[in-house]
Image (cartoon, rainbow, N blue to C red; front, side):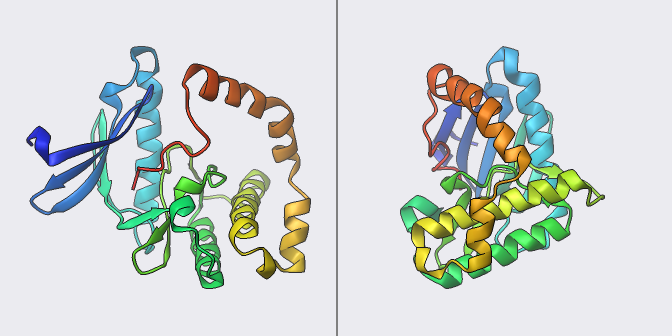
Length: 215
């Protein structure tokens, strides 16, 4: 494929993401071969996690289709949408549909684990929601206590976005969920997040909305 047929969307220490224009239409390619040598094994592991989640969720509209996975690259379908912070969904129907999509994802045994990032929610051309970037997702056949906790966190992060764009439509129950993060979330905020922010912002130079071009 010629270089003119691709557009670089994102590049970091875990590789790069490109929009590829092929004969069958556009696709997104995540390339772990471009990752830093010390992190290449981890980048490949994240490719495998994303591929597994996409395969499990293939029946859902609003989730990219897995096209191909090999040792160093993952191809998935391109979604015609814009990141949440660009699309600014102020229609409550968007959040009703997004909540339904997240619940369907959970019923199939997948938690996303990174829905706090606005770029991981898209506003499609028809106004519908979509979800991308399943690198740190988790698939399990058992609805364990940990799975239920992480699923609740997925919902809580969606509600944070709803609070940003449709605050007047939050229900009493949703406000209660927002006001009561799980123990896992509290521990993360106290211990893991400061380390994460130091690494991503000071060392990797990521921004809060990193990945906004990855559709």
